[in-house]
Length: 461
Ligand code: NAD
Ligand code: UGA
Image (cartoon, rainbow, N blue to C red; front, top):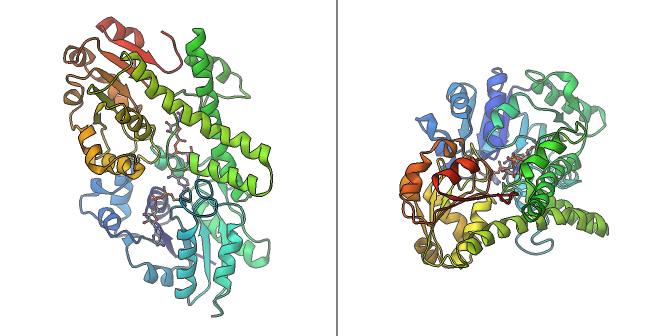
């Protein structure tokens, strides 16, 4: 089928950028991104394109170019489904917070709702593409729901997991390492796969296409997260033994079998997917009775939680075992640089720990708004909204945020932090002035020479 009309359900971090690229690369296709969230869609349609709800380098320019031409954002979900030949499902699949599989399995309720809505609305044959990250065999469940409507409409379900990383989404989408497309090995299944391949062929070289299934997506994220937990495990050993984790990472990264990427020790990985996808993998392994497999992968999460706690604990210990009523400034709240996404950000958990120790936390992040920071903390439900309000102050200016602080903690590796006037920051802080670099981005010697007591992750210097 030659595709000329696409609908994408879910205007989030995946749906928005992915569809912006398809619209740019396929001017002959009308792309409509729909979402139930009225506020989010309004932001995607904001006349000032810099106000779109997702910050990603290069994204607002792309949206500005295609919006209104062949890229549309709308809350009219049913209309878009009805008109489309191909429907991408890019809704959220968070970890379940209730019932069977609570805290581990992926919650598929939004996926099922989409399938039911497509089943209700569709009057013509459709190709449904799973873009969301899903447990193995979800395609079968979707197919069951769609095929039991009895209205004669035929559906093909494809699995096309997304590998973009936030902060580099546009680049990742423009030059993906691979595109996975899984589908039925029937004539109709192959035709559907071909239709999706033709879309990607507008900018991805054919020879990079591979066939695989839903499990490859979970495995890729598990392997990436496992590398971060592995290097973080070594960081603690480095601190005790006087080695330097950056040097260890550099040395092992030179082995071409290991490679140098994803070996940056940090306060702990965050983001909406690593933890969720590994928990889901653990759940799947357990459900097949593969306890050793489940325990192996669960350790990646246990190590990550330990790293966040260890970072926070180190701040308390170094500040003479109390941070009560002390101003601790966080530079960065996002889970990594170049994004305004804060989901599962280490900053949330470190601040929660320090608030329990009665610290006064000041936060500055170049892209994250105060409202989001309070939402993140309130979501944890550790204390009342009022108590969170009293414990945290959000600043728009980094120098104001650092003024009179006892300590500064770097939680996100934003480039601009490296270029600050650290002498000015030092002069306006309480003494001794501490810096805890949770991202290893600052120059230890330079900061020490200005008078800071500096510590980074994985180094005893
Ligand atoms: P998100 O929360 O940013 O966006 C999902 C959107 O779907 C929300 O705006 C929500 O309102 C909307 N939605 C939910 N149910 C809906 C329905 N029935 N009808 C219409 N809209 C609905 O999530 P995301 O970060 O874009 O992730 C989406 C999926 O992609 C997840 O499965 C995730 O694991 C996967 N993924 C995410 C990334 C990433 O970097 N964020 C990368 C690869 C894969
Ligand atoms: C990750 C994967 O990299 C993507 O391929 C995948 O599509 C996506 O998850 C998904 O499925 O959602 P993302 O979470 O956006 O992308 O960002 P990453 O660059 O992977 O970083 C994740 C976390 O690990 C961040 O908190 C980052 O700071 C941390 N990290 C990463 C480290 O601490 N050290 C490293 O060396 C690398």
